[in-house]
Image (cartoon, rainbow, N blue to C red; front, top):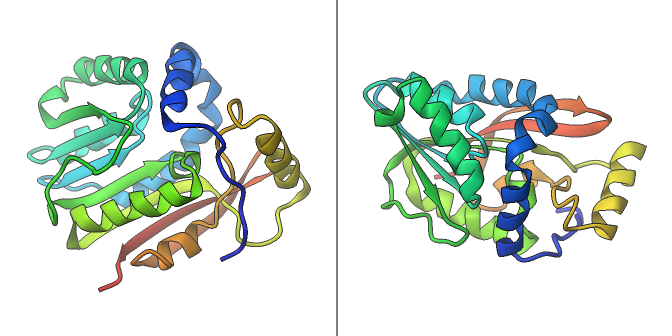
Length: 220
């Protein structure tokens, strides 16, 4: 696995940071939405499924998942209480509250039984965790997924030498880790080295930064 930078701030500090961003987050992250939408297309949530979203933020994807599962259930996990309040209001407006539940936590394990989930979705979230914690999160994803379950992730991507914008961003991340806590990660390698088999991988660019959208299954 190629080297990638660390996240030099505690998880608790991330919760406070995103609480501060919550009122403006939809505007600040608007450029991410088309990539999240592509991820949701790969996720393809079905009626009756139990799906977990890790890092639901202000609820952009959570609303769509909740609308799709119908007789199933969508669970959102995030560490920001103020983000969760915004997401909850969105769910209430579309009357999907009975098909979705939001959990705020900044620690593992994921509060779900083993082999219980049909799918897991995460967008621009795994790259917020420090390197050792990403592996712990993926280990928990393996535990809670059903044997034929699927994981779909959208993230900033580092597999080959980064373009100049990526190198600049990584430098700024290293210098201002509390401000730019999201950094490119080798998503495919991380999945393959932590018990997953990548089925589909789509490479995109966002403001000069590589983005990857992957669908993976447990490597049984």
